[in-house]
Image 1 (cartoon, rainbow, N blue to C red):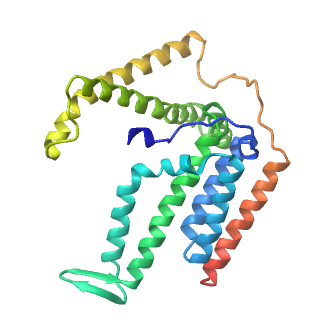
Image 2 (image 1 turned 180 degrees about the vertical axis):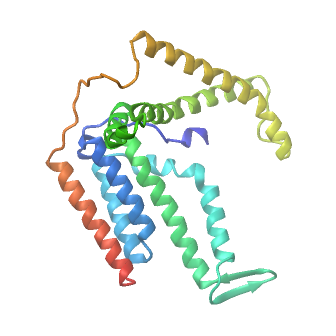
Image 3 (image 1 turned 90 degrees about the horizontal axis):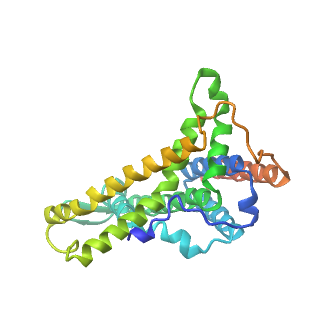
Length: 267
């Protein structure tokens, strides 16, 4: 299960999506999220599904890899669908004991499940196609106006980027610790919930120690390279918008307008 978590991973490439300005990709993801919450019908969901399929195709990232990121959240999606099926009022189709399955509940369950899956896949595309360094630069420049009110934009962007970057590292470390504990006879699969929780203690303690050690090593490495925050720093690669970025903005605006139109007319 741990190997299925792909959040924070970056897959290098030279595709159109990889070459987009990181600021463009962040804005596109935000527009995508807004459009997903506006979508209310099969037509609007179909439009967003086409957009998602096009993005995955252009990035040349395997669909199996993208779906892999959804797998750890299957339980959450199933619970969401279950609650929508049995606790949405409307025309009753089936009734037994205290449960009622309504037509509106079925539609809500389908839409909510699709929304969660498509949101996960769409947002993961940002980290899949953007390196942590470029993501930091993009976030910092987008939040640049907040520097006027003394918001530490550079530090916030750096922390967000490092947190995303360390997720795969910690997952890999957890997998190694679990393998080592299993080799010593630890059992994580049997017993009740309390016993399983107690069995995690031999994993959590060394994982926390490893995380603090990595944080200390990272701090020492940054200090040894004379890192003192964003004040006075220059960049090797300066971000510049190109034609493909403006085309992407126009396409995103058209998609958002299309979803709003479909929602307005109830299509």
